[in-house]
Image (cartoon, rainbow, N blue to C red; front, side, top):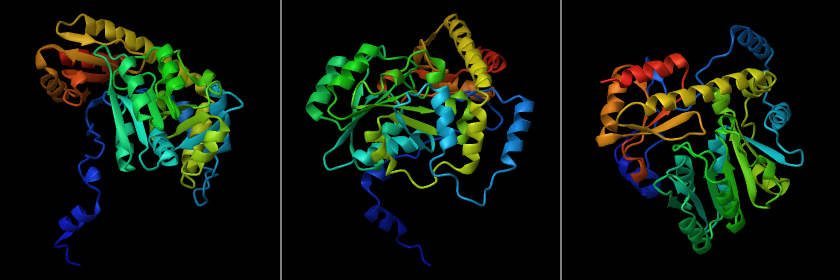
Length: 360
């Protein structure tokens, strides 16, 4: 088959908004200390790995998985303190849930709102679906610009608002009373994205049911199961029954279901790892604070946003990579992130290697 004219066909039929996008970038981390993706750096103890493999040996991979993953949902309810009267919908990571929610509410003239900088998939999925996206800039200290935010909500009447709590990539928690004002002012649905819940003591999960337009989204990725790709959405059945209709059949595969059920029975190990990451975060912030020309931001997540003086972010990023450490360069992605890098909190050994690689 001749491919002459393929570019013209693509230009004719693919939406211009999509052609202008760049696919979600994932850096090649082979041979590097990987501190760029907010992953739990700890592997399971060998005894736990063997017990997990024993479970997988009985997997009937010739059969479709259970469509509702009841064992997974039961484990999540217990470990994440989800109110009994609230429903659950599972997704292939938070990304799929964001898409499912947006698909449920899509319609002519309807808009999605979030703040910026924040998780890029809110904007990207709105663009995928042809919905208008409203990005309200944070203040220079990364707090919510409430006057501007409430004004945009009143004027634009967004059908859907996403707010990350803690926020990515800034790491901070927005003021709880500010989020409540947003929920109370919003004409449509408000989703609080708690992807980094393991690293903070604050949550909106207990408020589910108090507000008719509030849902809470989480993931097991940050607690140490990033490779399984499982996200969850909690909230009233009236909302989740509708969102469930957009879920593709069998989206949670049998290996993920077995692995998550097994993992949640050993939650104490993940809690120990989370505690270690929290302690390492504070140690790393203190160490970075002592380095001239580096300003670490307070964080309630498993990463630290740092600002480098003198426009050095690109040079320092390259230096770290050359010395075997991969972090995330955010300089250039948003005006508030000028001269910024984001560092995932690793093991003590990884953090020490990162600090050593920072040296001139």
